[in-house]
Structures are given as structure tokens and as C-alpha cells.
Length: 225
Image (cartoon, rainbow, N blue to C red; front, side, top):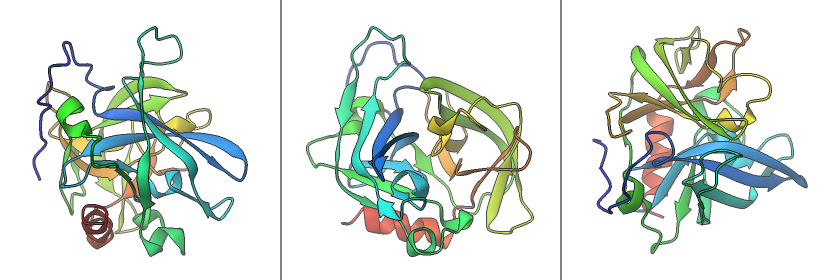
């Protein structure tokens, strides 16, 4: 699926904060932050990692979930917009088994919340295990982007990205859910091929699910519910 550019006139578009937003939610009475991205579909979809919609530490679905667009970091003076979902979804490989290869989640926004026309939407591609990629998201609620080569990990259903990326590691919880993007263009859009979901033993690298049948199941459900 190819990316879709915005149709609304937003003036100068920021390459990170148009299609990426800061996710905030509550689980077990604690507040958490992640990153979520627009993605093409018939529904108004936000793609993030599974651990940003279903929290295994507390064994529950996220509450008070919101996607903040136009969020330029803690010192921004510009207003941002809050988008709330009508439902959250994932796959049983994540919610019941906590598998890294199934760490995929969606927020389905309300029908009148057309984020694609405002910010554009990333496309997606499946079964990608190598190549040059960008990782886009929030590190400690500040927008960042990194670039890296992606490779298949020792688990054939999991990919790994490296590089000295501020989105990975301790203190950068907001980076979870950041899209791993191929064919990243000057308009800030590309094809999402995985998501930052887990830190590796090397603090400068991270793991994400290879987009295969688990992604297709999660995407098809989210785009039809």
C-alpha cells in the first residue's frame, strides 16, 4: 500500500509531527506514553505497537487513550490536537502470548476524525527483512528521527534495527510504537514495515515484528471493524 499525502492545507508540514503523534494512556493507574502513526485505510487508523494498546504489566487494555497530533515537544507554544479512538485492537499473539513477533496495535478513530486528510498517511509493506529505514517518533516526548539498516534477527519473525538512536533505551518510553519506514520521502511519508516494540540487549538497537500474517490479520480487522 502506498502512502497518501494530506489534502488539507496545513502550511509548513513538519516531517515528524504530521503523521506521527504522541500517544498517552493509563494502565494500572499509571500513565504511559508511546508513539502512534497514521496509516492508510478505509477507517481512520493509528498504528502503534501492541504494548501501547494492551499492557501486559497490568494485564489490561489501555484506558484514556489519546493520540496528540501537532505535538512538537515539551516546550512547544503551538496548540496540539487530541484524537480519541472509538476502539483499540491487537492480535491474540500479543494480548494472550506477548510475542514480540505480534507486537502490533491499532487505534480506530471516530468516522469524522479524518486524520489522513489533515496529516497524510503512511503506506505499508509486508515481509520486509532488510534495507535502509527511518525510525520516527518521540523520545521523552520530544520528536526525533533516526536512520538505520534493518536486518532479520535470530528469530525469523522479528527484525532488528541499529544505530545510535535516541528513541531506544531507558528514558525513551515514548519511542515504543515508532514506525520503521522504508522509502521515506521529503513529505515525511513512506511505507511502514515494522514498529519499535522491544529494546535489544544492545542499548543502541531494537526489535520489531516482521510484518507478516499477524500484521495482515490485525490490519484487516482494524480497517473493517
